[in-house]
Image 1 (cartoon, rainbow, N blue to C red):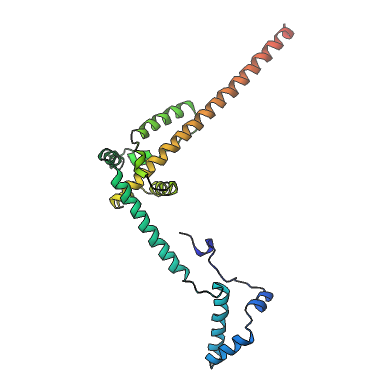
Image 2 (image 1 turned 90 degrees about the vertical axis):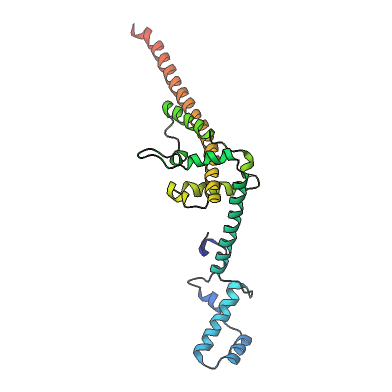
Length: 234
């Protein structure tokens, strides 16, 4: 959730100019009379002036809830919507899909990499061996492919958010989530990682082809240089 500084929520300037103080915060005759009718002492009068002018400046004469109130409401709404998506995805998963996801969440034997950590694997430098290894990783990811209906009705941006949240959790933390959320985050990570792996493999292939092309070009230039210089040397 954003902080108030990341929103368009109205705020007072920390250092208003003299012109702003005069044009915006100086009370008119009607306001002076209104304040004097409602206060007797100097300090309460100044306080009421401050409240009056800041109210006019921040809400354009319309009262809004405090930012913290709006933020709590947004968080509550977000949690409710996410829970609906979690339940929806959970209900759409077949027994086979549930078994696959459970395998990814299995706790590993001692000193072995968990399937959960393997799911987050990223490609290394584009070498021939690394490309082979990542192709094997892509084949492994495809074993956990889910039906397209799993996220039917869920916006793509939400799927990516769920995947990003899953990526930030270790195996113990993902197990702390309620089952619908745990399965939804895992399924989202599978979908996003598979799509990303396909893009990464294509990128690695392009880099390898470019590397081969560069080496071939250099070899051709060297061959031509040797051919051209041989008669001169003889």
